[in-house]
Image (tube, rainbow, N blue to C red; front, side):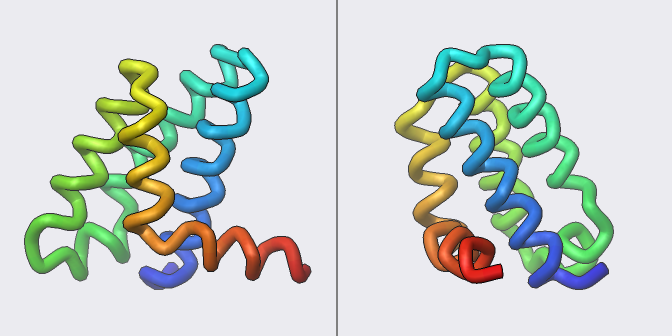
Amino acid sequence: MDVAYESYIYCRWVDVWLTTDSSGDFAGRDYAAKVMMDATTWPARAATDGGGVVDSQIAFARAAAAGDRAEVQTAFDLNGCPGWKALGSEQ
């Protein structure tokens, strides 16, 4: 698995968190937060992190677990997720 694929999957889970938070599906939101934390150990990201990326993902996953929508939206924006979401909608 490469970093681009992992980034796409990560962004999809951040989007799931935002969507389930908006709809009041807190079980789905909590699961998405768990996957966001799991993503910090995915092999390509961990192998290529020069410092800071994984640390920021851990902080965003903790914010997600705490229900901090503003921080999760920041994760979505800073990780280029709007572009990944647009790519996914074209498939």
